[in-house]
Length: 56
Image (cartoon, rainbow, N blue to C red; front, side):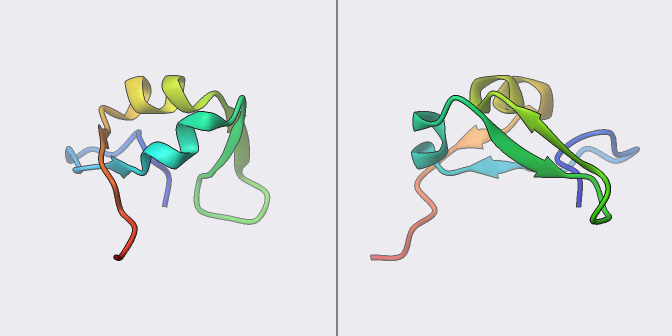
């Protein structure tokens, strides 16, 4: 599922561990629809909440 571009506002969560990378790849629904993006740009573009998603 793509992280943005929906007609309904979704709650998006991003683990802070992803912020250590210069680039991550996000998917847009198919094997051919992926794109590179800086993690901070992904947070901004998707309106994501950065929160620890790991299990203890």
